[in-house]
Image (cartoon, rainbow, N blue to C red; front, top):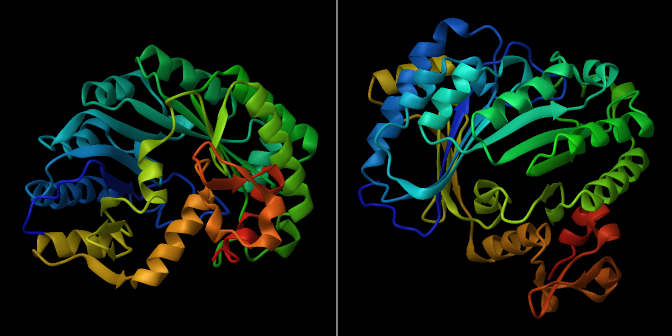
Length: 358
């Protein structure tokens, strides 16, 4: 980019592809056998980001995801962002695994402007975690939350997944109860999905049941809403003013740059993404070559339809003129005049509604 990106909202995403174990449902670009590349990879990311910095006027949100970002040295990770033009009110999120949260790391994060942590809880029930292929100790969730709060973080998300094989409604209710008792500022609850090429995909007997997941979604919405949170996106609930601004940028077709392997970007109506392996990424950066692996540019009609389908997931909803009669019963009035949003039943059938929008 030769000119400065000047937008009211502009995001940065950094992908950290290192994990101690790959979960059975995960299709992300992550590795458990590349620890020897951590320092080289983070240095390559720093070179990539610093090179782009001159073309960015202001950053409204940063999200460090993975993988397991808090598995790598905190200082090296934070050094990547030195000198970037962060807006004074920027949201700065780091995803963390409960088994690796330490006071020292949190102190470094906070000293560098991190003000939001997203903690991968998934379940508070040991046998459900095993079913997901997760290895963290649920007791460490409580310890992690205490460390995070003691570090001064006032915006904490706890991430949940429902629908694993063997998870009963009672198990799910237990996870909800324990998470609500921790009083996070934001809760994400996602239905387990089967991604091609994962261990979960290769075991049909472990695939989630639609009716079971619907029942668990209804329970989640009831429990979380009673707990004082508002649903602002189908799978996300937040206390007032604690919505994830970075994700809202994605859902509103905003502009952002992604750094690191397999990271996606969206600039000037063009989407592009990086090479998938750390070795290729490191080599390209070292040789001064592009790390771009592919790109696309949506035609105006496709982009407008996508905008409506994304907006359908949000509480603002979509203008009523785009909603056909056959799905009106799955909608209700939004707080935005002239808009309709999904009602509770509609949220369960969001994909069916989305493909019917005008």
